[in-house]
Length: 287
Image (tube, rainbow, N blue to C red; front, side, top):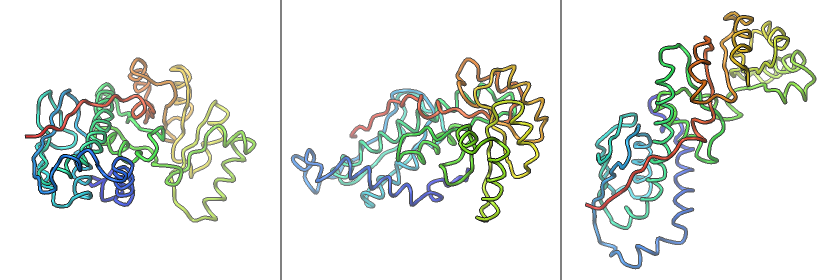
């Protein structure tokens, strides 16, 4: 994942920011309009109320700047840094109404992303003695996927495909609907040749027969072993014998993560990185 994630996906983030601000502000922030003078200037600081891994700071800066470029954002930390209770993350200065209008979106974004980064970091640390890499999935919050995958990266995880467009993943339903593994992969090979696209191809194999049928197809980038027990996973890895990179998924949790990583599988994908992460408690307070 490139360092400057925002610039790489700037169009998607601008759409997100504009849509989220419109959703929250609507016809106007009538709470502030009713009692805050238009000329009022203020400074506020973001304070942490819980320890964790910070994520979303760069996105918060972009939210402020997109809504009101005159706001002055001063960071005191970096994305990926450890935050302690009571520490200051940034200050924001400028028009009071602008600070209040953007406050909730910034907090929601930072709290959610920091929660994901914190969980990802915790799980990544558990398997750092292995060569296995932790992957996210498409089990993300609608319209917030880019931010959530950014948070996984900040927390030390590795991003899987963004969506249906940037990789091919042949799963059990594709195979069943298509009439079997060999037929599916022959059709996939034909599609790749005709379309001229160059995408990673990940293929789910449910048993030894499907592994045997998949291995001869050179365009297959990785074999996915879904819902395999530890003995089944070890047997599959022995059969594959490093001919293709491998990925384990399905029913993976805090308790069995290490054992699965220690089998020698190259990747573990966990939807829980995004759907099971708890937001970190943060607050924006006036100085």
